[in-house]
Length: 105
Image (tube, rainbow, N blue to C red; front, side, top):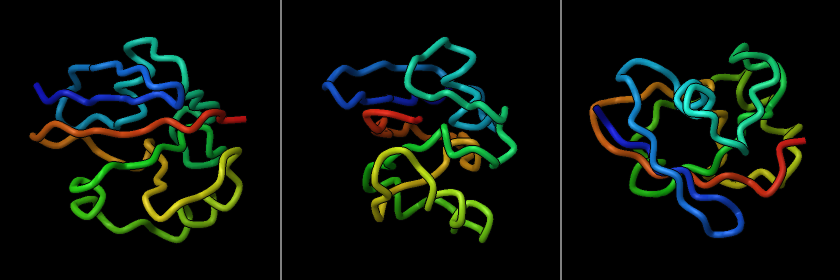
């Protein structure tokens, strides 16, 4: 089972073992991780699952579609080059590190 490390804005790290094929958002929600609200339940309609994907994983992610790109313009924290919505990212076989923004709303 791959491990996703969620790094909080205040420097804490939470490691979650995730099911391959689930989303990075689902793994956070299922583990009770604070910091990913997922208000829309993964429908890519709220931008409350915003994360910053660390390199080298950011360059390995599938390209974002127009819907995700538009939603990232309405995040609570500034959008960066490594910004993604965790509801749109599927857990693969390898471990992953993502940073959580200081706020989602």
